[in-house]
Image (cartoon, rainbow, N blue to C red; front, side, top):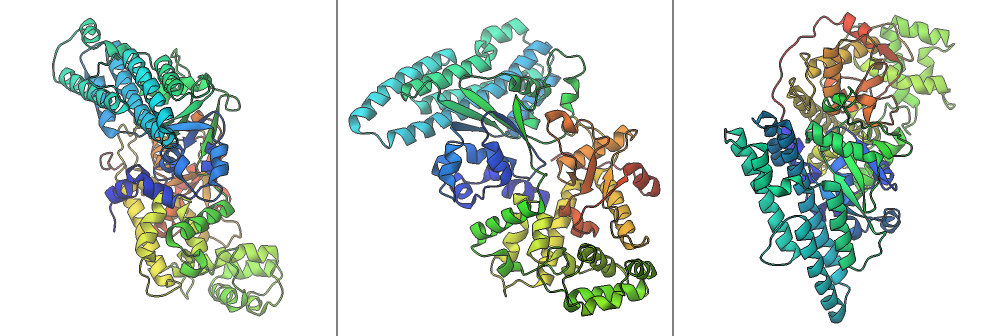
Length: 598
């Protein structure tokens, strides 16, 4: 079984080479939505594709991508992207500032300067990319003129950044900014280990700490564009990835900026849905990020994907990465509502098997005016009710023995194999797809790959994802703390929902989702938030604002299909049961401490 380090690092788009990212990129609906003119906030759990979207918008990727409709995508995104990755090194430096024995203003200023310097470094890298693309198309005279203009602009940029350089080049500017990053880190380290400096001494010795970001950044962009003889309306996109690891003050400042506009740049920000820090923003603080979602920024939620959308993405992903079709590699999933397989004995057998051992199912079929044994001989197109109930019949049959009692299934190839099932289980999550399919698709013994092999690999990947959830920190997990174990809470919810489908009286529309009660305990709410951030839960309530997941009450969720093979759940979400009812039935939830945040 792969461990969480493999999931989080090896298959993280942040660590992927740009050339490989471009080569394997498959545009999704959220990517298309991110091309909208203006600010955007991309909300999604870990591994849901936020980094891929932002990296593909950067000016070292989008101009060089030659996929289907690439030129149309470029035309609809008239910006140059500057990608700023979430760097745990500077995040740890900034985090240490809260422990310093200096004024709040000095600590906050130091944190903001560390963050701003990261942006300036990334901007300089983008300038280098932009210059190389521009200069490659120029003749010798034009190139000479460009270099003269660029040197003048670099000098002015260095001046506003309070940088002294030996050589005048973009590479020298980047090197000087990287040295500044190290200097800020060294200062933070010394202060956190007892080195004494007053606020005035800090600002006198390090005057660049007080540089104001927005005006400075506007000027940097304007000076560079001027050097390249670009029109005044040339604009950039600042692509801030994993922004949740930034501390409270930085998140508040940048998110407040979504209410305003800049002449030179827009924001595209990636965030997990639940962040404990932002609760302070609306508690009377002078900072307030409340914005009109219709006018100020666009919210893109990565988990609101239709079945057709996920299947389309899955098909394009398989063709791009493995040069084959999903059907050729994995075959059909027999017991899904939209399977194209003939009904015949495949459906008839499960109806007959369940009817022979389940009195409540026989009663249900009688009320519908049909003998369960007649399904096998059905020659006409099945009625809608029969077609829709068939997957529940197949699922219930899998978990009942000949006596009608619950049984444990080691192999569930009829439920979790076939291309439709794998597409559904993936939730459109690129990281999960790579984790699961690389082993399965490389050098297969036969095509389509056996359902047994598919089910085994899918289940192993589901268990790996579950193991990652079990490591979630309970204390200060991005500002969220709880005494509840998120994994145990999800397991309890899953067991209750499974019980409803398998052992309670047969119901064509069983409870397979849940709604959070208004009076639910904060500990439970916070455990759900952590699970949502890890992708273990899927929101079924359409959001539309950054703050929508600060309060989960009255919202509807389902357990992620990523965990369906581990928990033995059907790939279906129907009506919701109150969470209080589920937890009232459960007697096994324990307040168990989990591992540290990875």
